[in-house]
Image 1: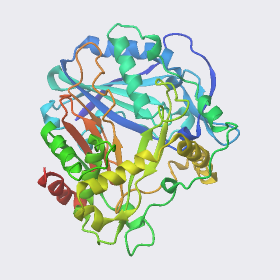
Image 2: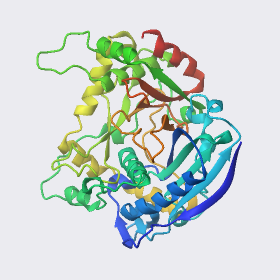
Image 3: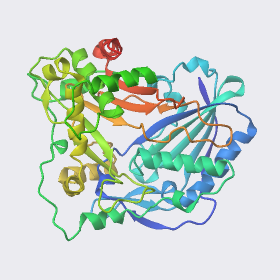
Image 4: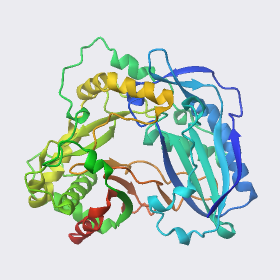
Length: 449
């Protein structure tokens, strides 16, 4: 049981710029809710811990001043950031449980360790960043649970914010290259470039394949999902990568990467577990960081949603489950390689339609979340890679976290691939899957490795 001890509204510790911040189309189309994650620390929790966290949070909000703002609706029906310095929420809590009681911190078991958000409030009043510092029983370890509004930034931007906050918590200062690039009109300028954008087909913006015999996604959307953590040793990861590269590649073609092999294996395991017909079409959907893919590239410290979606070419379940792992890995590669500068620009131009603008209007009318994003559940799959993110660098002065992970299960089948805290090449797959197929998925996931 978790008890809330105190709650604070933390303001930037210095005066910050006021006004409205324009948001790119890639910010408009993401989920408007908050993404909850947890950082687990073994260090003893004392009275200085929360004071250090609150003080450094006020300091980082000076550099990341939009985080202390609120969402508002612009005259053109787009979401904008109101940089009004209303602050971020900091909660002190304690639990009657020990660290060991939470087991492997699987997403469904740790929701009490992240802030609860009242979405019945007007959107303009909801904090964009909330944090909960929860002390384990006896002060032996603690958890920092954060909830950040997805409209603020993508995963990489969120991790950069947390790591910068931690650096200030250690008493250090940020280097110039660590300061966030906040001006999102850089995407607006690229979007309205005088060079014409090619007219390209964008299957990632269209509905994905349905189960054979179904006319809509309603039945699959209603099915219960559950999240589990699946761990792979460095040896198991290497075995998968070796299997993906067993088939001879053409001269000059690079070997399949760790991610391509893992994604192919997850896709194949899901296809087997669902026991679908051989002629069932299936795809996987990804979001990729576009900071370095655009020409010219975005600044590395760009703070916002710099993501583009892509889907693997449609194929059949029978092919995925019977052909070598390299077949699925090649499909994954084709999806990633599709994201050229021209393709991304074309997607940015086409992602925000009237349906999305109508969703935004309804959001500010108090009708809640209503995204117009293709459903990627059964017979398809969404896969997210956080392999390259420095998620274990959040050292506030008491050591690095011993665990980082998501604190909720998705509403559809989705895999998030994260490096383990050992940083030795081992991997954690945070897997949300339809409960009726989950045990079979776990069986197929491990049986070949």
